[in-house]
Image 1 (tube, rainbow, N blue to C red):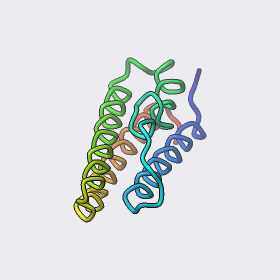
Image 2: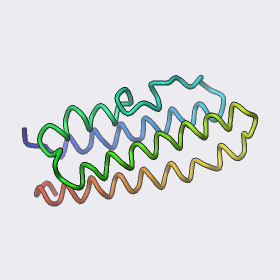
Image 3: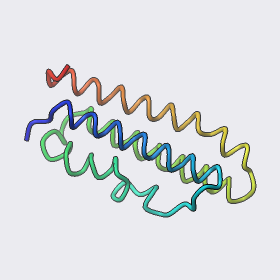
Image 4: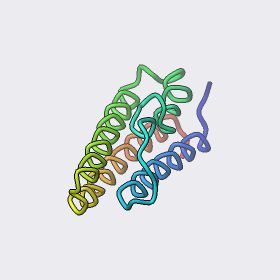
Length: 119
């Protein structure tokens, strides 16, 4: 199955959704659930498994995107644990790390997109 620009746009939306949900947790708007940090249950993780990997799973960009996603989810889980321990400002400051991972994932996906001629 060939990917389209729309597929990559979906990935970006799913990444924004994760960051928004995490921010809501760290600002006390919602409770954290385990699915938020699970690669298999997070929207971006599901996208990688169902859209990206079936056609391009052997490409290094896909492996790198998976690695970065796992790091981002682990970091989000750690920030949530800090928040729950009362380290609220420290947890919120960690959102910069999340943004850094998101930027790296975006760069990897943009590179894959370009290599597939989808600019």
